[in-house]
Length: 169
Image (cartoon, rainbow, N blue to C red; front, side, top):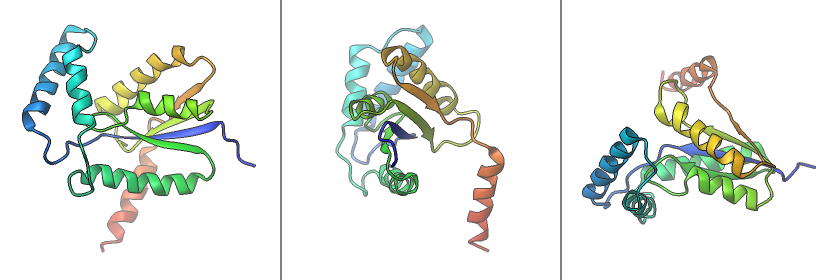
């Protein structure tokens, strides 16, 4: 019998939904840049804008990225069998990684593996932000093992891309 204490979170980048005013995103990115440059915590204004954009109404037509990630997630969930599973987004879309970790822990997960659709090295989300978030969360959940399935084996990534290209020969 599969254990229900294991969980997996698939993290995607997140997209800006059609219909979300560009000035909200511009202001959010400006505040984020200022915060990062100063090394300060997120301001109330930045948090409010982040939440507003993440909670913006979405459909497959207004946010095809979210729809695509959810389709990948559904197949991954089926492949993994009877484990706890959810998705998270780095930006622009809900839930956040923090929210998804909390959700799985509330459902009883004691071992959570986080993976991402961002396969290649050099990305700030995959190489910096996700590890930072997990490092920040570990002390909050001392009884939970939080693992990050990174880096990807680039040979396996290349093999997957080869199979994809060969489908179009």
